[in-house]
Length: 194
Image (cartoon, rainbow, N blue to C red; front, side, top):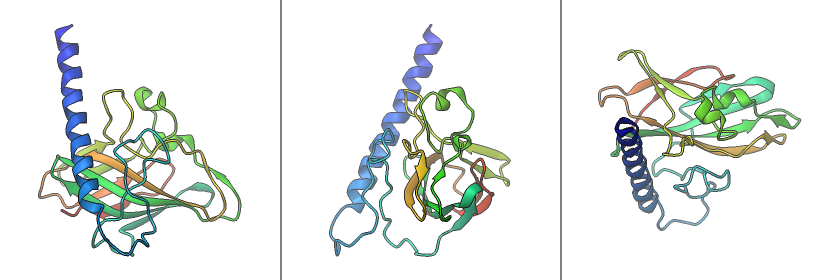
């Protein structure tokens, strides 16, 4: 009983740290500008599709870090992979339907872990692979087991694009390149900044 309580308390502290990091990060990115940003601001909630859009990062390049092709014309463009002070990496991108018909996003992108599957459609199956350190990093979860990633989507209309994010534990500071993997998509190397 005490081991279970300790593990639950530890997960709660990690989730609180992640939420605090998100709040600080969103507050820092929010101010001034021309008002013509194409992406909405981020929300600390990963529970709803509408509130889980990543924010536009200052200095973020228009050229994606990687483009991963999926099935039925789906394309995932990774636009940033930012190391945060809280000990995690936030990967931002755009999931786009590059075909001329509506496409259902495969359920496989959420992975097959029972805890994540229970929480509905998400990008919970994403991983970062550090080949140098021989480690694989899975999407973080909150204390209720919900993945810290964009959730609540099922299909994309022809040409439609959805801003997405995923958060992972950070690899060691000297690891700057990892392979990004998402079920049903090709794998690609990405650079971690920050």
